[in-house]
Image (cartoon, rainbow, N blue to C red):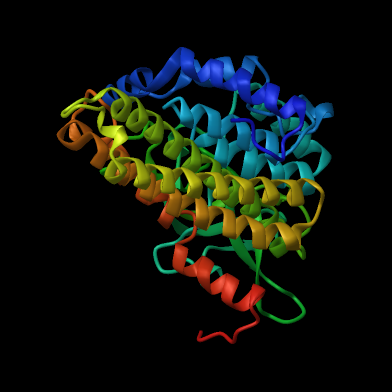
Amino acid sequence: MTPLMETKEQTALREAVSALGTRYGRDYFADVVREGKHTDELWAEAAKLGYLGVNLPEEYGGGGTGIQELSIVLEELGAAGCPLLMLVVSPAICGTVISRFGTEAQKNEWLPTLANGTRKMAFGITEPDAGSNSHRITTTARRDPATGDWLVTGRKVFISGVDIAEATLIVGRTEDARTGKLKPCLFIVPRDAPGFSRNEIDMEIGAPEKQFELVLDDVRLPKDALVGDEDAGLLQLFAGLNPERIMTAAFALGMARYAMGRALDYARTRQVWKEPIGAHQAIAHPLAQAHIEVECARLMMQKAARLYDEGDDVGAGEAANMAKYAAAEACVRTVDQAVHTLGGNGLTREYGLAGLITASRVARIAPVSREMILNYVSHQSLGLPKSY
């Protein structure tokens, strides 16, 4: 079904990406995960076709469109059973921040290679003792008075794809010379920087992208490692977090659509009594309800992407949070109902749904929990007082 809010060009993009995803499919993705590899072949072909940098500026090798187009790429690959999580991180978060706030040198160095797929960038914000409270981030950066270099110290946790990323965009804090208070800043930290180490976190999620704990021990960075203005760190941070929420919604919707497709195929053909099981309302109605929730979440995601691409950061912030919440809830419900529709077959490796039970929970948890989104809506949208 063609989404209501899409242009002809966006619909054509959706169809083309869907065809690419179908050529790879869930079996390819499952093999990559089982063998401990990465989706390099799919990443390279998506790059060759111009999909990885579709949201990045044309003058730096991108497609010159926006987050709405990049969300289409991720959703359709997910619906085909082979989502690329690094699309959320590399072009959506890091590429957006650099294209909006980076220096000309940073744009020239990073954007063309992010767009053509030859390099990736990870994003590091979450800390062991900070969680959803970004005001408690303890990763700090101070200047070396002798050289002007930055010295960054801290820890990060649950950072995706650091092993395959040439650098990580690290969210730290610097001291405001006027007030003495700490303010957020973003730094590009090369993977092989001295003092920058990583430890893989053992996860029970079937995904090619690994999760890492990072340690920064007085990592020395040149002055030009700082992205944007030292005094505009908070604005720059949220410029990346809104696309992150929109893309997480796309990730969840793609997963939900894949699960729905497997459930419908089964419900149409599995016959126990006179008619296929999909004829029975006990099977049909929960699937119909899940489909409605997926379509509603998709509309909110498209609204958020359009607002963001039009430059309405405030409006996009509210819509992006709502889209991420709605898509995550729809994804969990759809995956659960798909597994239930298949019964015992839903837990077999052959049908490829069992692993989604765990994966679907990720959308509820990351990059921000549903409870924190409800807090955001309570305070920002409804004007209710805070309890914290």
